[in-house]
Image (cartoon, rainbow, N blue to C red; front, side):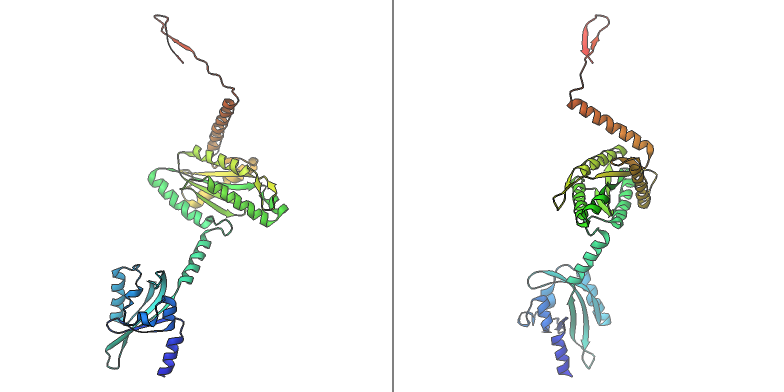
Length: 336
């Protein structure tokens, strides 16, 4: 029986460590060495302090030993340090062992390295909240960020804008050149959107050829129109795909503003979607606010700015000065 127990002790894939009542290590198995890097010669006679990572507080250890003292058992996750210095997560259980007389004789610790499990969990969590192609946040993460953004905007009396972007003519390119070309185009679009964002803005891909940009702390509703206009310009520049072919697409943008009619993330998303539908109906390559009056005002302002800029470049503006005359003396005192 003892020989059998010893064979199990040595062959199990879990790390095993037996300590005496003074918590000195008296026995380990090969898996202990494999996981921690410490050989029997290095570990025996030492305490488990050699494995301590510094990640757990004194309160953690106090609670752990409190559980062992009262129930004879503890189980949980713990971060330990390998001989090489690497800190890693373990799933560990510790049992207090008593002899035939009921007196405490040893502590037996069984542990497994759960680094790979943690990594898998982390990757699954990432994939649950991100688009697998572009690695951008997905709808789930957008709704969460948007809800937090609304709360911050309410608290700080700031504006927040949600821009929903749909690529014009993307389907034609996908159908003509195949999915690989389509994926390449989507990655380039994501890259252009990321390049022009501010640190506090969030770029997301909702799926297909739909993206969103969440703008926090925008000066006012019109500032969002400037960003939308810039996005339409940037996304309309030519793309060179993997196969060397140059393609052109456009973009339509729907804009939802907070504070406005919508006070929840879902409602803002619906409003931006409705505005986007309107933008595509009106003819591609334009932006539309959820509110019609905002759309008109912003478009008019942007048109005037563009006309003025063009007029300056083409030398179409002349400056005329009018004399300011003092009536009593007839003297020129200034110009306007």
